[in-house]
Image (cartoon, rainbow, N blue to C red; front, side, top):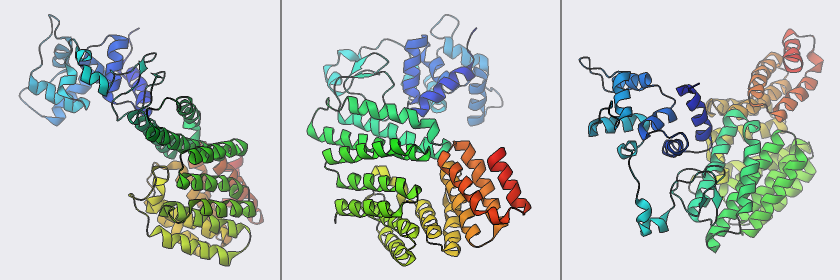
Length: 445
């Protein structure tokens, strides 16, 4: 049975989630499925010929001569005898719809391999099983590509893929990408002895360290603390080898989060103190502010609110110096006001300052993008905790209900556990309908 356009779209969606461009997908499908380039680009977008005609007419309406699926078919059949050659204007418009260059839509023979200068710059589009050393930037390497040497461009592709996984986690949860990040990290470690120079080698170590700390966060979210501990130690080791004190400091900070989540403020505080010592005077403001906020949380667990508030005030002062230019890529989320407000609100709940906490948490919910599902779920849980501290139980249940819906969407074991812990705090109010409803939703549904 012939595959539908929607079937190809599902395959394309998976490749896009891995960082492939439409150009790479079309190139790969031309070889795999023997499509001509116009068909390959259309299917890479999951479009039928009728879909293309409709989009064309919406973009360039012509009541006297609207485009039809038959005309799209004629252009795709060409240079077959039943086809019609697309004009340059047609190619330009198709390129706009397919997000590519007009020249990409023309078939023909490729003799670029005869250009020795081009060979030194990059290799042809890689596909599974082909050895490659260098490739154009802008998209991660397709799975299965065999690397014989690792250049800055290759490392950049690794960095792009890590960032793609980071954003998928925000939207869909760690369970969606955890295994892929593990394989991605393993691949970087596997080729770490194939870098072309010392600078590239250090950059690859930092890229692997970024992936390792991301994997640690995913393990924390899944309540796999022993695994998270291992990823943190790997992050620290890679940072030491790369002589990256900021990443080393951050790795210790992530390690402290395991103990914060377990309620062990003293061990967390010890690790955070070491992290600040490692970071030293040149520590990026984002790392320093993030560590200070975590110190505030640790003091909250130790029932030392005065010190906790001092640490939180320091975090806010330091955050004033945070900018995109001085923030490492692996902590880029922290230079956004939404995350600063979210972390401040969480810290204030630890310090039993619920009124101030609710202000920060509502600010965070206003600023957080709607598709940052896991972060919004955690923020609603913090809000429910703050309301419980103020004995405003109906508001607490309302926030917790929203948190549970989001936590189920991402499969966050950590957030689900936090909700179950909240139910314990709500035991004195089990006679209220809203509490009983929340119990049913969290424990039974």
